[in-house]
Length: 186
Image (tube, rainbow, N blue to C red; front, side, top):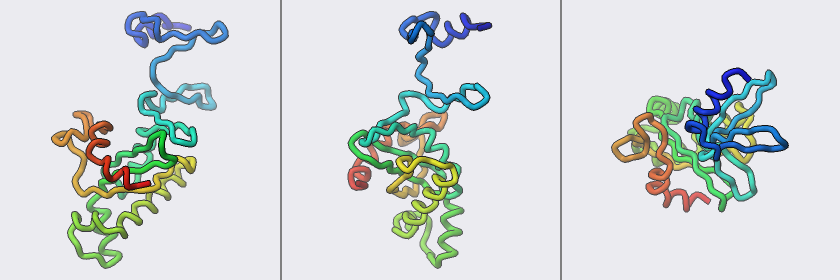
């Protein structure tokens, strides 16, 4: 393999052999990425190993991958998906897109300001239906469907420690803040 030594050194921090694994005399590199082999033989990186969780029924879930899929829905501005090995379902905190929510509110005769709309159960139900539609369109497995949501009016921000400077979710901080809501989900 051309360039293998250079690739190997960069992936293993200058030759750290703890990332090497030999299976049936074939070298496998353990670099912490999760990937899939596409039909054309190309490796596509899906997520990082540290972002995988195992649900109580034994299914593994890539949380950031799901956040990117569900985040494509027009109603979602920010999303944090959570699950753990003690529960069989995924839950999420959603910061809805204000424009989309206000259009929905006008269509259904709600005249409240955005912050108040975020606390009504009708919006929560609508968001769950939207997320289910997104899951179906993307052919997600049933265990990857979000079963409950908390709707938050205030976007995730750096000041509260909910996202990094590159706008990646700070999972530990989000869990600390939303733990009570999570415990009441299931």
